[in-house]
View 1 (cartoon, rainbow, N blue to C red):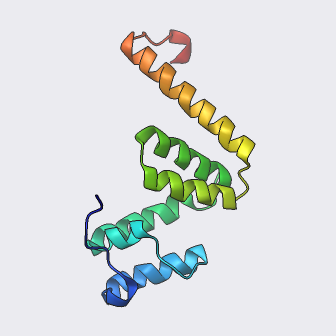
View 2: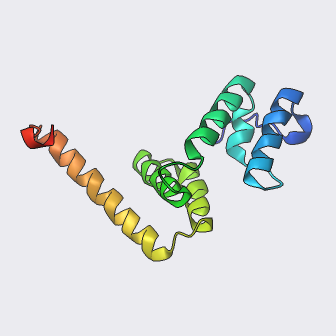
Length: 130
């Protein structure tokens, strides 16, 4: 059950509206998604999280599609349905095909399986990997 108290733009404080405006300008959209509306209940967390997202997801050594696909992979592993939906949509918008998504899910599933096996068997790390 979702927590109540999402902050709509029309009800937002000037501080929250400033962050919402930056989100819309940066993402070239005319709406604020539910994640940001929920965080807006705590304006400091909203601002800190938005600033961090902008910095991390900005162009860098990794291209935007790769970053979104990594975000999907971590979200699947952490079982965050909201982040899976949001970042899958963003990855598709940046060019992720169905074949890429399927391959990504195969890698995520295999990595999670082998991670659990290595952890369960408490496999010692090979010296060559250090």
